[in-house]
Length: 419
Ligand code: AMP
Ligand code: GLY
Image (tube, rainbow, N blue to C red; front, side, top):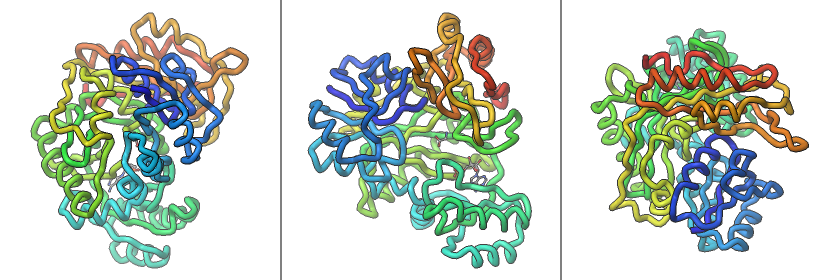
């Protein structure tokens, strides 16, 4: 099977690493890929991941059988629709289905209509009405969200009235994504991410992972794309996992189907576990980053076979088997991230960390005159699998300590909550 992978972050490196282990794999390309993905796939950098026509042409010209779409933007832009129209299988939902991430209002209304547990909410298309509502409600914290895609920055948890009113004004900075605003009840609990593969009928949930969204230890500082993750997350015990499947994942796929939408690909449920019950914080239409870097190392099944079955609508007789080990991933980020940071800083120590047992996923690196340098906010995901979470955590930090670039920042408390 000839495969084209779209994307070039840590998630896509983990996908490429896992896909490359499949005996079904023929030729393997990535657009744009990364220095890490280049170990497994031929990387093509001169095509934009938002140029659907060029991507379809590339897939045709290279006899691609399956296109695996990593990031949300091409999904929300309808890449899967155009590939389908050209007769090429895609792993990843079509445009209407990707709205589950592309429009928070779409997702919230779907959940409300089909009784899928989530925070109470109101939708506003003008900031003044939102402000009046917040003032009248007068309960804090309260959560303000931009409707559209805002690179993970469109959500503000406001602690008081002033912060909430400012948050409403800030939604303007997200352009058209912030034209409509969701004001949501604050849910107090423990977060977890459950990813699931689906062909629009059957779902195969993954073991749960927990991300660390804030930039500093102790969940302080700004929200980021994610500073580290571990799996399995003990907060999702057997009982919660069963509730996630029965009350959230199955009803969501069924709700979409009832609306005439067949969802094929990975459905990511961001959850808050409140008093023993899971509620949806958000849905994403793709794998999580960095959650993928800890769940795939624990997956014993052939991911490529499963993704192809999703794309073809053939998931009925498939299952996933999981290792009983634990995995942890620490993100090494550029100092300053998620605000401004320096680029092109040389990275040392990766080979040493590998000899200590780490799998290193490249999130934001590039080659500059043959040397590996930083090129993004999140730079590397250092991942360890071990029989226990304690061992994985101890080992991962020994590996992190031998890797260096100027201004490096990472959290020292990844998985601490589970230990
Ligand atoms: P999102 O981009 O929707 O995942 O939101 C980013 C982060 O904001 C989440 O990971 C939560 O930590 C927090 N958050 C979002 N919505 C809520 C809510 N209703 N209650 C509490 N925290 C929330
Ligand atoms: N780790 C959060 C996300 O992928 O959206």
